[in-house]
Length: 114
Image (cartoon, one colour):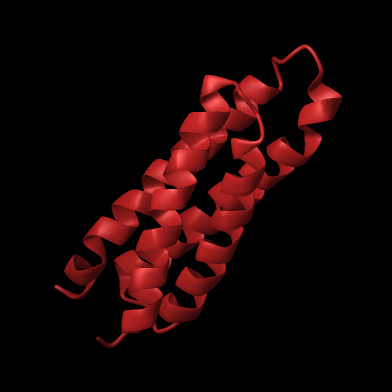
């Protein structure tokens, strides 16, 4: 089955998307929401690209390599931003983003046909 080689990356992308959604939602409940604006925006962008990447990998799509590379870059941005905030939801999100970025770089370097 074509998507088995992507299994760990798909799981990391789905976990990251969930963590980003939870982080964005929790950030909206913080006292200074305006201070969290960049975190929320990156959470949303990261969750979206993670879901796209997971879907393309699940289908064995030929764009998986390029999308995984883009996903890794956005996960890195989101992780860096979340890591700046001490709230547990941000720290959890940063960790999930770092795991996802690592998996996406690994998959991207393998290529869709590897």
